[in-house]
Length: 530
Image (cartoon, rainbow, N blue to C red; front, side):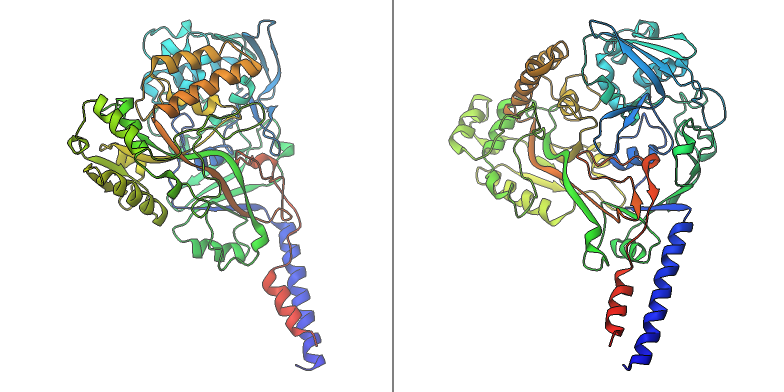
């Protein structure tokens, strides 16, 4: 290529780059790409992390997350105080806190919303986390049907008082979670929500939704609308990682959540990954005999060569613990290796001196090569003693959670802690927890968890560690790995997006920055130089 042509190509490419920056400066819509997932519009019935991220656009509670540290920051609560004994909390709502229909958000909205959350008929999985509130557990479990018995009341239009069973240092962290936002009075009790019914109190308003995309616009009635920099959001539900990555490379999508074809990604530096406060694990159906017997569960776990499953080749952070260790908390070690003799002894004590007499183990796994390899290792170990195994995977458009409703013996799932505390994992396994899919029941475990609610500091952490040790020793849960968050985003093009252990990124905190040059343009420009 001669110098004249090279210079012309350079001018053209520079002009294209300038156009790209000009378009970025004029951008009014932030586009997110994720898999072909459904989204539950009712925050009390939502359970998946992608739902929580999306609903963050529509709703806001008393507190929200600092986008970088994940510390709680005041949101709908302008002020708060707690009593000397730490059991009575008083929140003053912002005078300009409004619903998207223009009506005020009141303390009574929180009272009625949280009562609705706790009502057994609501089916709110996260309701168990409000057991720290006085009277909430009995009301949630149906032992007491009087809503006024719950320690939540409105002092006046903007003052909310909450009475706790015990001091809870993590209470403000808990209230950041999407399950504790208020719900507009027109929506309480509705089983199905539609777009035209959606009334929120967050930074954005939902304007359309189908199985392909959701669209949001800025909520001008939001109390802090002046701080919301991005005028509109669009969430795309995509079947193909190749299509998603191509659209990201072309600049149409600004954030890929947990999906990308890294082989064709134009800017590998945009990959953001880090250990997250989450764990993948197998768990038994402890509601059914003989799997409700800890001896049987532990025996079967002791037959498995876990060192072949929990490998660094398979997982970024293999583990035998449920809770990711962090400052102030040390998780106990779970079952890490096989012990066939101990397994046979436990089975014999449980009435199965002939292991082949055990019922068939129905193992539910995701349809991935790694899970299939894990299942083969477990099946091989159990088959050696004549124990039969049947492996099932979800059908097309079916989640593993839906498949579990048809019956299972052992299933895989993953869980991301919803607030930075061991209780985010351990409250799930109490006997009457709405999140206890395993049906695990242990009075001793329940007592440890409840005792921790009356403790603080290192004493509380030690009690929670003892509870986790019991859960692992009973083999109710068999941890495999601590999670790794995976996102693709140019953090120079999008300000306010930070890697954090909970992989939570409030939309309110985001703004458009200056994108890097398109790598395809940069490479073409380099080739054009003489």
